[in-house]
Image (cartoon, rainbow, N blue to C red; front, side):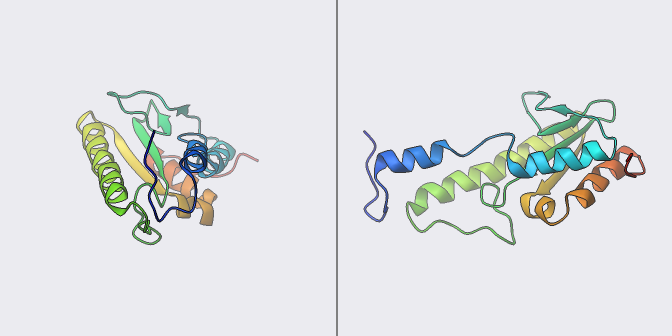
Length: 146
């Protein structure tokens, strides 16, 4: 059984249930971006494995990999807040996430891929703008088909 941090206001079972509800894919920012990209006529593959890496959106022909980075999990410079409880764990966990992001980007670029990383807050502010950035990287106009 896991030990409980004395500062945690939740039981081990409650914390486990809460953390278990965190989605790894098909998050609201991902879905929002995908809808905006689709409305611009952009067609993509989801979570296509490239060199053991699974970007959120993949444009195979253009060799473009798109990642949607959550502000908390990927340490957004504008919105990241380090948890006060279990600080040592979170420092290491979030540091490793950033290192993995950099490694994955380097590996994809070495394989000849373009990489676009979008912050959760960028998508929330303007999904159309983010989709237009993708279209620009694909060499498309980004005009709506509607």
